Every structure is written in C-alpha cells, then in structure tokens.
Length: 474
Image 1 (tube, rainbow, N blue to C red):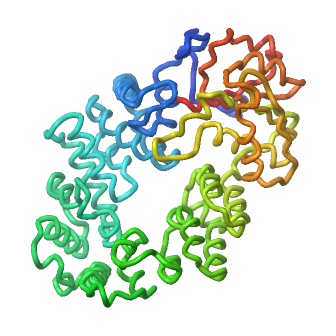
Image 2 (image 1 turned 90 degrees about the vertical axis):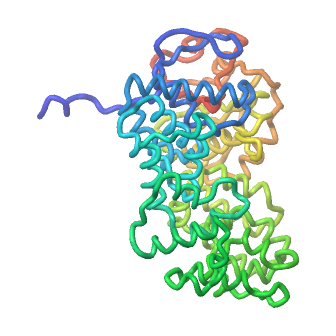
Image 3 (image 1 turned 90 degrees about the horizontal axis):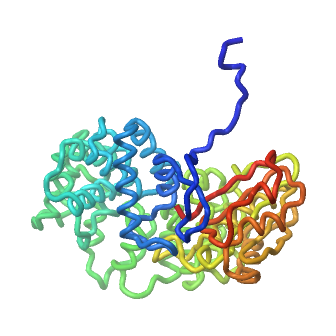
C-alpha cells in the first residue's frame, strides 16, 4: 500500500476558522481566513442586493476587496473557483464580478477566467458593462480576449434573437466591436454581419432576403414583416423563428390566450415553463397541454439538465392556485434534492426562523426568503426517511414532524406558516441545548448573526458530535 492510501478518508470543509471574532451584531463568532470569507460570500451574493444585515454597496465592496486579496495570495484558487461558481453554484452575477476583479488584481490567465464566467449569451456584455462601470473605457487584453472567446462560443442565431433586444443598453454588436470577435465559421460570420447591421440601423437588416445563410433569423424577420392584422399563431413557424414567449407577447395583439400558449409550450425552455404556470392557468390552456408541460417538468433528465435550484420549484408551487401542477412540481423538487444525503443514526436539523431569515428575500425581485430555502433543505432530509428531528428556532424552539415520503413542498408550506411562532431572535446555543437529544450529528441552517449569548456549543452537545453550520447570509 502506498503512503497516502493509508490516510483516512474525510470531507474537507471549504470554510476555515483562524481565530475568535464577533458577528455583525457583536456576538461571539469566528474569524475566517480570506478564502473562507470569499467562499461564504460568493455562494450567497446576488450582487447589488441589500440583505438584512448589509447594504448592497457595502457587500459589493467587501466582495471586490476579498477577490483582490485572495487573487494576490492564491490566484490559482480563484481561477478554479470562477467556473465552479458559475456552472455548479449557478451564481451568474457573482461570477462576472469575480472574474473582472481577478483580472484587475493581476491574476494570470485572465482570458481563460473571463471566458469561464460566461455561460449564457448575454454574459459577455455583462462583463464589459461591469468593467466599464467600475474601471472606465480602457479594456485590458485579458478582458477583451476572454469576452471574445465567450462570444464566439455562445453567439448563435437563437441566442441573438433572445438576448439582442433593441431596448438593451448593451447589444451583441457592441461586444463584437469592442472585443474584436473573430467568427468561428462562415455561418457565424453571417450572424455577426447581421448583428452589426441591425445595431447600426441599416435598412437591409430587416430584409429576410439579406440573410440567406441564417434560416432562423430569416424566419424571424419574415414574422416581423407580417402586417399586424394578419399575424396568426402557428406553432411550427414560431419555433422555426426562435420566438420566445416574451417576444410573442409583444408581437401579437391582445392578451396571451390559450391558443398562443398552446402553440408556444412545445418550444419553450424548462425555466420558461416553470415561470409561466400561473399564466397557463389564467389563459385556460387545456388539460392535454397541461399534461405535456407537467410531464416535462417532472422528467428527471430535464430537471437535471435545467440545473434549477430546489427553491425554484417551491417558488413555482407558491405562485399557482391550481392543484394540477402539484405532482409535477413535487417530483421535480424530489429530483432537485436527490443529492441530499441519507445518514446513519439520528440527525438534528435546526432551522433559524428569526426576523433576519424571514423578512428579506435573496433578491429585491425574488419572493424566496432564506428561511424558506432552509426549510426546504430540512424537510428534504427528513422526508428521505432519515431519523431526522427538524426543529425551528428563534427565541425558543418548535419541532416539526415530517413523515417518511411526505410531500416536500406541502411540508415546507406548513413549516413556513410557523415562522414567528417562537419569537424573532437568534438564540443558537440555547436552542441547541433545548433540542439536542443524543443525536449523532447536528445540522444548523442560519445566517449566523447571534448576539444573545456566547457560543457554548460544547455545553449543548458532546465534543465528539459534529455540528455542521450552513451560513445563508454570506
């Protein structure tokens, strides 16, 4: 046996404490090293969004300073973190900011890092917009070349029709001109030519005959050229022209009725279907169409490919009144939480229901709060059949019973209805002491801003029992 195979396997935390400190509220806490602090902030940072304890501008400055510091200490770590943050953690804006600040801090291979931050066709423009707003008009070569690489990879006909709206302040043609993007082939060269013509309002940009090499764009232009009074819904033509539901809503006079939605649903993406369930009901789509949508939502392959975070299904569940979507959303939520582990022994899950967890959403436009996301995690663990005691806490505690195989979304609804039942504070140590009953492990989901008392975990649980803390506040 080699030297290293004899070492015991274990799970390494991404977060390391380097000393004692205080929380935002002045309570006893820990000082993290810079990488840990950056990790905790990055995976929760929606950028420019206020949180309960921190203003968006202050949070953004702290994030940029941390990226700079860690880049100077360990640039390879940041370079590897950016693609993980974008593609696994699904944090779009934070990835763009991190990549730009990495380049500004002098990190090597900036071109590759910039390109790795872009996974959607509107993100090369996001990079340029952020850089210009923060550092002015001078674009360094790593930014230009990274953006060019991303644009070459992401710019397609359908992407152009979806993300190059004339009302956008940054257009795809701006990216092409500023980053000097070279097309990958003749077809992309034709697309770039059309984007430039459109940006500069050339008359031929609206002529279907001017784009023989771009069949999707040609169909789209033909639809736009149809007189308003003659516009009719045709599922095949809408799909061939890459028409999104947003574009169709503006193209066709009148409300989006059942006929229009029924024509669009076969070509709509997974996220678009998830967002429009209430619209389908209000328009009165048939049960046949609804069944097709539900089958796609519940399809394990489509759930995995969509990479929707579990709380998206909870958000959709909250938004609809019709029960016909519930089985599909329940199945999808189960698929999205399939990697929640099953443990041996008994597990205590403590979910913080204090004011800071329940009064502010993750973003200004979003409706999901940290306590809802935490409840979803706790219920998913319990519903798997683990020996899980799910407990909510604030100034006091309450136990929430979840039977094996229970509906995750309905149980989250029940749990969230109990927020405020035991006050609005964050008495972590007292709650641990009250809820611990010889469990084999403790999982704590909170925003970590306790100030009522010192951390006295060892008074509440034996030192041999692991306590896992998940910080939703960053």
